[in-house]
Length: 109
Image (tube, rainbow, N blue to C red; front, top):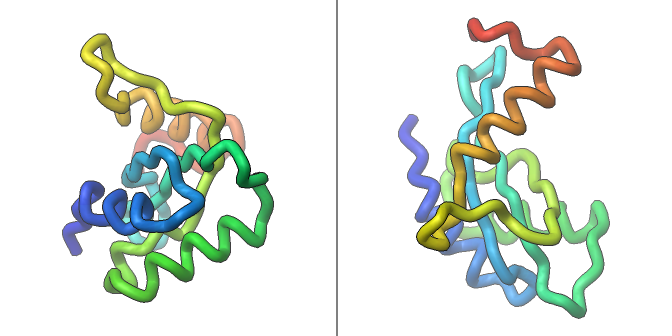
C-alpha cells in the first residue's frame, strides 16, 4: 500500500499539540516498511506516552490503517535542509542506524 507522508503530516498538523511533523517509512521485517512520525510539540505541551497514543488515535480517525503511524518520536526540533525544509533523509538515516544498533536491520528486509 502506498502511504503519502504529506497526507499523514497534514492530519498531525491539525492536532492542537503539534508544532511540526515529519513522516517517514521505516524498514520492518513483517510488512517491509512501517510509518513513523517525528513530532515537535508546541511549547506548552509535555512529551509522554499518553500524547503519543492520543496522536496515533487522532490519525486513526481519518486515515486508513496502513497510513497511521505506529510510532511517534518526539523531538525538540527537526533537521532542516539549507532551504529550510525538513530533512527527512537525515531522519531516515538516523532511524536505520538506530535499528542497526539494536540488531533489527541488516540492510536486507
